[in-house]
Image (cartoon, rainbow, N blue to C red; front, side):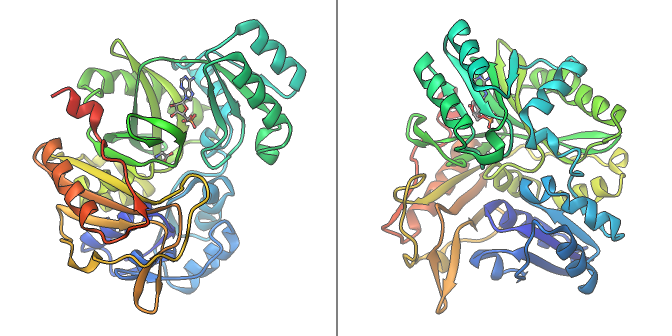
Length: 423
Ligand code: AMP
Ligand code: GLY
């Protein structure tokens, strides 16, 4: 099979790696890819948010199956255009991708489906939003309705922060994404990421993970795209997983189908768990990054079969073969991230690192210059490892991270602290 993966992050390197583990993969193209992906697959320059361009490229290259990594092309309808061209695609339609692209849409679906989530209200008027915050007080959560590259959420611990966030969003800081604002009850608890494949009818849980969104150790400092993750998440016990599936995910999928927009692809439910009860924080319509890296390392070649069956509507005949293992990924970022950071540092030591089904350094923002790997983004590498215990996975992942020769790189030393603290 000829496969095209869209995206350029650590998530897409992990998806490409998983596809290549599977003998069904004859040819793999990734657009646009990165320097690590270029070492295992063909990379192609392509505007991945342009559905017509993607469909044309796929047709010209005899691509049988397109896997969409990030949310922007999904929200732009790329999966719809690929399917309209008669090519199999993993990823939801633009209509279904509103589960990530509009926070107010998601809240409406949750209410209609009876799925537990934070109490909420939507505002397109600044004064009304400010009045709401003055009345309700803090802590409170203010969200730009649309896609804002993970930056459109402010968890305000006092009223002033909430007011500043509202002023900023209505002031146009997030462009059209902030034209409408959702204000939510602040939920306490422990967060986890829950990944479910859906083919419009059948839902199949494929794994749990925990991300670390803050830049600093002890979960301090500004939010990032994610500084490290591990799988499974111990807080997702069988009972919590079952509750999340029965009370949140399945009712959502039924509601989407009833509205004529059946969901197909991976649904990533961000959950808040308190006293064994999960509530929905948000949906994403794609794999998490860096959660995907740990999921792929654990699933291996079957990940591709699962995505393929999902796209073909054959999930009912599939099951996930779980290994009793653990994986961790540690993100190496350019010093300064998520603020301003330097690009162009040469990164050494990568060729000497183990690269097998237990150890992988997935690339994110890297670029090859004169045969050398250079830093070309905020999040640059993902030192990822698997083991029989989380402690073993951690020891291996940190050994990889330490062995990377990049003085301008930083990483958190405490990935997994919640889970390991429970041992
Ligand atoms: P989101 O982009 O919706 O995932 O929000 C980013 C982060 O903000 C989440 O991962 C949570 O840590 C936090 N968050 C969002 N909504 C809430 C909420 N209602 N209560 C508490 N924390 C929240
Ligand atoms: N790691 C969080 C996300 O991908 O949204």
